[in-house]
Image 1 (spheres, rainbow, N blue to C red):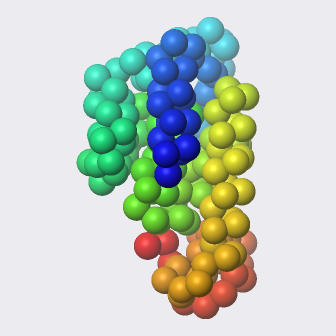
Image 2: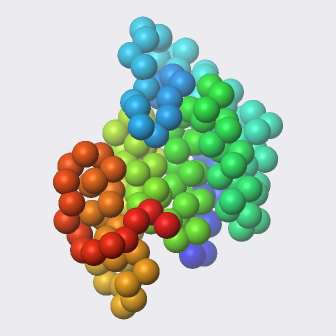
Length: 167
């Protein structure tokens, strides 16, 4: 858990120092719109989001272990024009901290699909691999069908075990 918090602290620092390209307003269920904007425009937008008071407050809540508060702030930011790779990455970290692996996996997947920052994509890939390993090697049945639930939520069918869900 310390490693994840260290990675999050590094990504917060990187997010405020260097912005990356991303899409525009979105939610987890849909990809960024394909509006024609310049790379500089998208980078500036991401930088503004990463430096916004709402994002900084959410990142601090995450660092303090207040995952539910951070999720509320990040979801609100996402719904009101603050969708970017940093928002989804931190949502993935928060859901992972609450052991809601399916939702966490889906936010990391969004970063891999639409994020432009190579370091953030690498962190998201590592997080997904860790979640997959963890879900496959559990010794209790709490969320046994987590990966099947992820596939079902995307309309891809089942698999992955019995009765689990996202939480």
